[in-house]
Length: 317
Length: 283
Image (cartoon, rainbow over all chains, first blue to last red; front, top):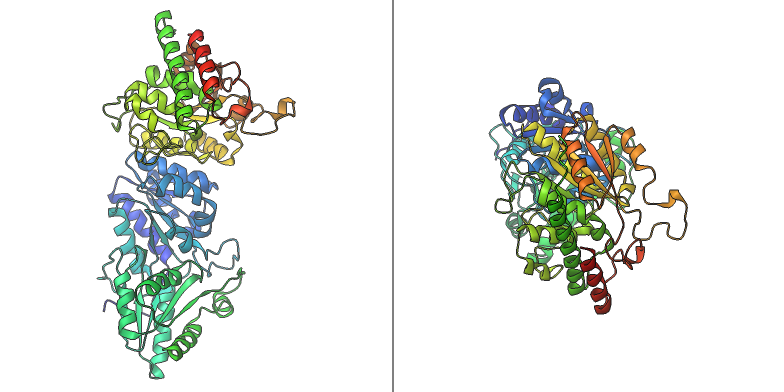
């Protein structure tokens, strides 16, 4: 197990800013592109401490992504960052035609992904980004669980040649991984052993799933948690193995129930190893602006909802 | 520093232009697919770029220091392919594979499979932004290559064109030259309504000037004017250059000129014969 329990909460965006600054200092190819959200995404750290590596692209996401493609053809490695909602919906044609299809070395950082976007509501929440990005050929789609994994993923993305989308969260989260954690593309990470059921989770939802597993342990339900940092490519073997070992699956993501991790896992299970399976995610609804706690409750993705879903799937075993 | 082309050179370029027009018509006729009007209006600019202006080598199409070209109006791909084939990027016979399964000559240019294509295009408004990125990359890497990009006038209805215009001016990309193929027709547009505001883009010179660009307006079918414009762009420092190339859609064939119905129509055998005869006489 590579997990740690830490009371200290860290925001992915802070880790992102510091890590990109470091990469921009050690790698001459690395440039940060901002769609004028630097103080939100924290890419302002690069602007303030390594100004020549910061390229302001203004409030024009479509142009930013096409410019990133052009930069990549000259041997540079652009890291384009804006809110996940704008990357995945406003600039997706540019990303597909000029970055994914030509397989260019552009890194895309979707800040403020998911439901918890700091009282901003429907326009700024990204509940479809996994579904959209994973449908693009050549695209790598990643979602870290905490700050440690954010850093490791960025270091991986810097070494990897090709388009990578990383979805990040806004607010501080408990730390899941210890510093010696190693991220591997296309590999699931078992963060908790268990024999009754497996929760397969990604991104921010892994922390909530671990909380749910602890609550269930008090009832005598032994829950495994399989974290999926790499949604594309997907670790099919780990999913099949989890189905074989525990006989029931609950997927858990801060994303729509359509097209995301739940769909990806269902695609594997239906073809390879059908077992009872239920999904946690935002149902077919538009969300709204509210506090994190209120949103987790209303849109049914809190650890309490995961607990209920696990009990439900066990009845189907 | 006037670099007027000598008459001999002009004759050679005109022959290339005529040959390009024939190849466009033959290829589209053979494939039963493709565009005609837009490619025909772009011919002189492309011939001038590939045979005169750009520092390129078909033997080494990925050279770091080569000049770049992005065809932002990607649906005019056949004009680019016919010029590239004549320039030696691939055999002329390969034009017969245009739009066929497995071909490197896709309906819209694909940089992954055809060396010499510097950006995949086809979704309008995107190519110019990529050209901005290439030119910016050249500056950041201290390379002295130049970046050329052709946009359409219809394409200029895309908002992204103006996002790109803004960023290019902010970063003082004087290594970037955009040519607008101003043939004044689009696929359907406001056809039948004849006021000056119903052309694809109204008052382009004023718009580009307002965005902070160096603006040059020329006859886009005149090799002397094209060459002079490229020279002026090279000498102009501190701003990107837009060349408004006033052209005729379907140029070179009387019954195709200025007709929006020839945007993407396939010529019959008889039409092809008549068109090639006209082009031959025009040399």
